[in-house]
Image (cartoon, rainbow, N blue to C red; front, side):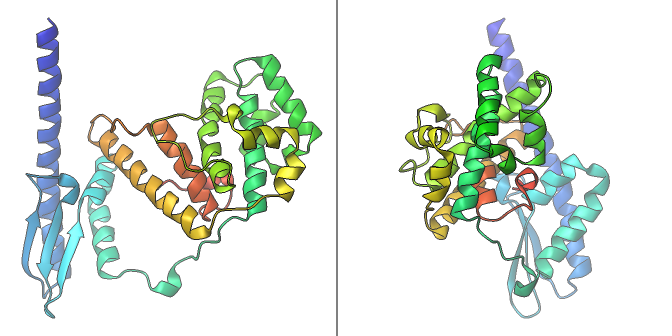
Length: 292
């Protein structure tokens, strides 16, 4: 029976891969037609990496009338179209137009990195949130009292306010979801110099054993007053690294494959969320985009 079960799993994976390849092949034909329609001077329009090799590299190639070589990568728009099949033609159109007519440099929104004070305040807010998410209601109430005593409530986002100061014990799923914010604390601690490097992305951190977190609980005001951040370019490089790891996680999930052993999906997402917020994404903490 075990052998049959293993064979069935293998067979299911093969069927999933074949379905993905057939879908990509159909999608690539539509994309080639779009190039021919929208780029009249396109020559040698052809597809690559559709059936064989790494399909994340699937693309349409062509040469325009001026001899410039173009590459239109298909994996991302194809992945989006799988979620929204009724909008497939629109997705193809937008993807090609974004390639042909990229935004002007002046149209890009310049990111404003969060200040050391803002990062320190956010760390204090997350301490309160994760403390409230404790399995023990007695300990959770101690976290609420700590937040009130030190005025941490002023640093909480609207969603965090409702969770931390909920009149009754929050729903279990909310406790789990906000408990994961412990991993978002890790990059904040690192950026404030509280650890030499981020832990591996498959390893959850024990936040309550981190000296900087312990000091923050003892004297929140001192944390804010003495806050210093690593250079912007260093924080930005880490954000790019976590963005790439997040892409690998999403890619594996879309393709029905196991996530790489060196990546934990929850850890990667929470740490990327904090880093993206630090470099300026999102109007507020509750609105940080996680596009890959």
